[in-house]
Image 1 (spheres, rainbow, N blue to C red):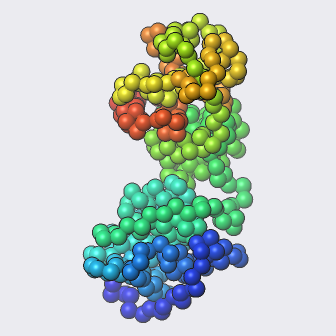
Image 2 (image 1 turned 90 degrees about the vertical axis):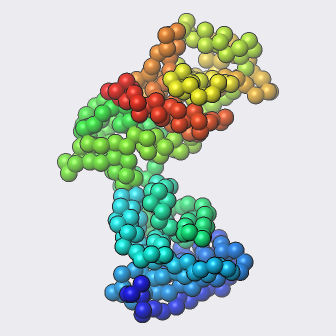
Image 3 (image 1 turned 45 degrees about the horizontal axis):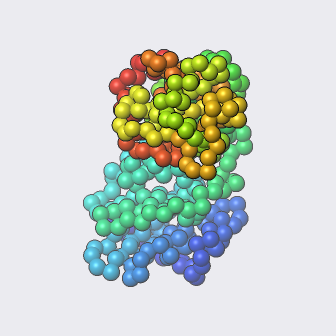
Length: 372
């Protein structure tokens, strides 16, 4: 780089465990980003590898450069961009910056914390990242370092009043509506249809906008939703609150499915069985089904407790939305909404990536069928 002539070496700290380095870097109100490169990388690179971090002058195009030297082969150079805060919507600017690099140079973004969505987008654009929690992804032609850190958001990075989690039934209700309903959507429309306070809707939309899964107008209306990315993002939160129990249908799954139309309680089949009904990929070995009350459903549907692996998994409904916008088979058996099925496929046990891919492809081909 022509503008990288004036540099100063970054002091290398004494060797500590990774947890000690994180505590050292995260002490005080602000993380010392200039030392993060050395503090984290020292324990990650293989034996025989060396690195040199150099800080640039204030007017330089980048904040620092990082040269990584393998035992054999060419040196790998990273142009380092240091940020106090990174959100998914910032990745577009990094991608444009990445295109200005000279041949053989790679962009590395350093910040106090990267959300899972930010890390995903950076990887998709082949932009390396590093933070003091130990999350590191260095990617170049001859180098790949991949490590997930503690992942804790520094307290001083959380803005008061902003939403930072997609957990909870209210959020799930709004997310399902965004996935299942075509844009444009207004805040009060979403609030009325989901029975969620407009203020909560606005905070949820703000988080999703920062995570680059939807776009809003200046007036706050949603005019575009990346429903597949939204499903992936939500599935991780959904998994944390899921309550399930497995039981045994002693005859076969057909007998269990045959009893469902006569049951007078709400239910919705999800997971692999539901996916197979819409987009066949692999014969399911079990049925996952949402119910209001697990014990009541077990008794009414004649399921047995078993010390062995069961073939029917009852899932306690996190909210009544799991029984909304469902689909029915010719046999009058009720399937959950495709968006719900896809979110569950990503995190339920015994899931298959083939089943998820087949369902997503079906959803893309038949969007007018399941999105209003």
